[in-house]
Image (cartoon, rainbow, N blue to C red; front, side, top):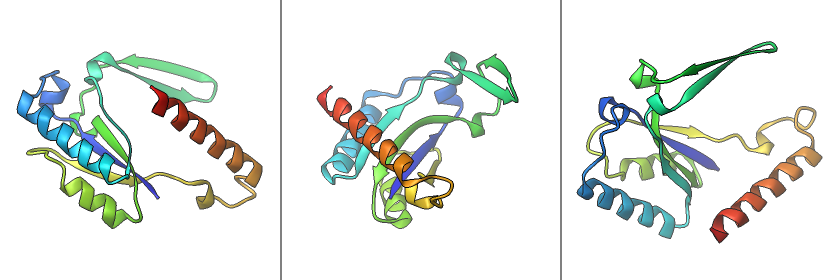
Length: 142
């Protein structure tokens, strides 16, 4: 099972405040620990919403709104993507994060097997899995 650990934004992350070297070092140690355990698929921090945009879809219409966005509690500042055996294991990894303040949301990623075959046929699932594997190969070469 894959889970995303979503690090919620706060006033500091939205203001672009860069953490001190001790925070970077602690986060690097945590990321190395998760990677060495063989469960880390990806981990990234995100720039403040002031550098982003939202696209609203309504039928054929697309409306783009540039950041910043006001509801900080609704924003994401970073994430980890883990491959683990259960939600409980994902939660245990999240609890081990070196964060001193903030909130992490744990969300399971959909897998092809979560959908009935009439919605997501086996051929489509195989193509998606092949694409995912190709992307992982490319990422590991970088």
